[in-house]
Image (tube, rainbow, N blue to C red; front, top):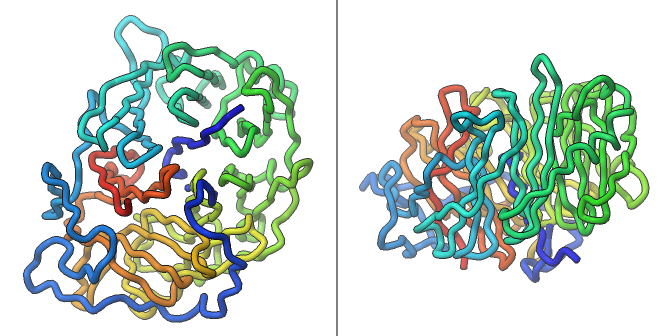
Length: 436
């Protein structure tokens, strides 16, 4: 029986549980109220100058690193730049690096690093031989517990191929399931004629593992990967140009852009995928094809933003969230930039139900009245009517952002990361705990 379920996602990518937050009915009439922030005063130019209180205040680690003047980050120092991280407590976590080649090897390798002291030290605890030789392969590592790990890969080069592996001893030994999974999928339309099926995403909800493959076909297992069954998705999902699995502790959603530029959402009901009951309102730009989302295996909420953190910063945007698997949606942020909020671009967010109202954390780039930009973390406990600033540091345009994660004990972790010049490649380089 799987007792612990946490997945490392590729910032795509974020389930109420473990006694973290009480549930609510999400019937808050103030969800569309204007967003207000505490008054800003940057006269000293120092980090966190406008914090008005909150769990972050006064907890700077004595050996923290500095990012743009903010002395709150414990540096992540590993053999290679890490790209994916997950946490099980304030002190215990895992990160993995990007796939890399080893001399005289025909496979790509991925290392998994572990910390037991809050991120001060990251010894390597596993090296995964992915069995994938394509240099352009996408490889994702999923840590479901300190002992159970998965990896999947996919490539669309001259030869389409993929691989999947499973470990139940913390990465010491791996079982290849590539042939088993491919046999379950290879007869599916669009997957014929390939030796193994490219796999793009893995999700774990309850005791069930889900895989999203090339062609939009799904495979699922109820026995930890011993046997797999192909689940034929709805036609509108399979035919879409872009598809995603959205997993929380209690729900699995399928996300896809529809032909009218809206965002389609389907929820698994135990036997079929059906459209969610709620309707995600149109974005202020009238187009939801650019919508990105965040979910967490430890929060039963999904956070939707209609603009990415880097492109179109001058465009209107909205932020909506659901904490009931799409039955209802509530607006957290919205309107024209500089009018209803000072958000310049969001890089991450978490949504959950608390104290009878939808609550959330957001991280991203914010601006003040003088158009000076800051890398900040904000929170709301009343569905966006009011917001508090938990962390702020000057933003110097260095492609630096913040990602958020929740561990099994309910602590919120901030992960500092940088991107390349195109805003795509991600490397985590710092961490600290927002809440204890």
